[in-house]
Amino acid sequence: MLNHKHRYSPLLAMLAILVMVSGPILGCECGAAGPACVYASGADVIFLGRVVFTNDDGSGRFTQGTLVRFQVEEAFKGLAPGTQDVWIDPGSFTSCYAEYDVGQTLLVFGREGFAMPVDTAMVSVAPNGGAKKKPLPPGFDLNNPPKIYWAPECSGTRLITPENEKSVALDLEYLRQFREGAAKPVVLGRVLQDENFGIFDAPGLPGVSVTIAGNDLQRSVKTDADGRFFFGEVPPGDYTVGSSIAAYKATRGAIEVKVTSASCGWADFDMIGSGVIAGQLLSHAGRPAANIKLSVLRMGADGKPVLYGYKEIQSNLEGKYEFQKLPEGNFQVGVNLSSAPDLKTPYPATTWSNNGQSAIHLKAGEHKQIGPFSLPAEATIRRISFLVQWPDGSAAKGVDVWADVGELVGEHGVTDAQGRAYLNLLEGIDYSVEAKTWVASRDNKEVARSGVTQVKPGPKLARIDLLLNKRTRQYR
Image (cartoon, rainbow, N blue to C red; front, top):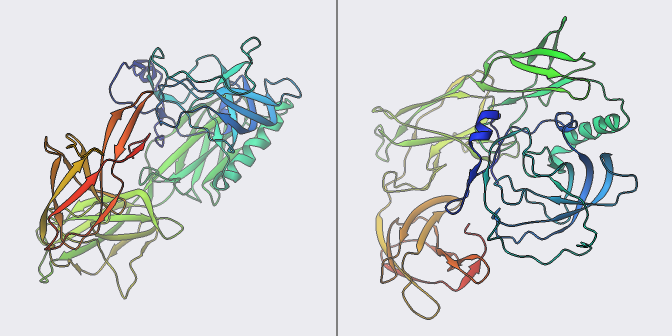
């Protein structure tokens, strides 16, 4: 599923509930996941549990009726004492369909009946008339059916992982107080560093001044090392929360929050940096390389590029470039780092470096000028013929042929009536080539595919044969 970062609008939520009979499946849009106190009052059941059964068919599609059985490890709300098992519907027939795998441990917020959670901004609804029939799960008695709760994406339900142990520990501490009726109203949140600069858990920003005002109360705190802030024992009422720090600008202004005796106020901020990396790109001959696409990659704490954490610009007529609005952190700059080589930029991936070091460190708000670097020689273009056939030897028409470079999407073609597709590939570049297409099976749609073939074009390579002899449930 998608990573969800946009706050919700109730009007948008109503307008975006679509009945889908056919066509592509739309994604579910959720607000950023809040702390447990945001969801506690609205949930009918809250528990910590482990998945022991799911009849998800593995297709990755939400057009299926699914049941998930949880073994309860700790209950916080709505369950009778001694309850050991709870059945959950993960959002069947909606694009907010959550994927729960056996063995996972989750903090679950469930509701009775179909009710989209508060953080849902957009959802697609599919009819269930053509759903694939599934056998009854073990322990499911039709004569005495158990209660089934609704916990799709956006419900506040969260997977317990080593990465979120700290925030979940705070959630569990709050929920134990909530269970005993001892939870006190608070206002809390987190300040992140440019969360849309890559699909990942953006780092928190420490030292941000966060203020709260309203209801005859005015306070100020600094965010901790993880970017979190907390105002304890806040009387019920309406408040305005703001944030500020040098060298950064919040993507939105002050946030209005409402605190009741049964819930918390929650405000998350995203800060955009003012750092700059500038330099010059040269051709293989040492002249300014104009109108060439360059990328800056955001590096994670592990020293590896962050997934989708990149920005792209073109060099000007003098080969100069300037990446703006960068947060504090480490970066790499180069050509074909975020996209595969193509006919416009026929070069292998090329990274700026200085004495073998490619990482560029920026302090908050720093403007850094790096030295020029040169492109390698242009790669020769080779036109490669691909013949795609079915296992019986017949031509496979209308099949996608993909030639990717590492994790980057490369060239694409579609076979003609003779099963042929022609792709312009670059000599010396390593491609992962695969042919694949959706096909109908007896019970569901499947993907017929050839499997991946490694290809490095050269002067003698002109044709490659691919056989659609594999089947999978998912296209990717």
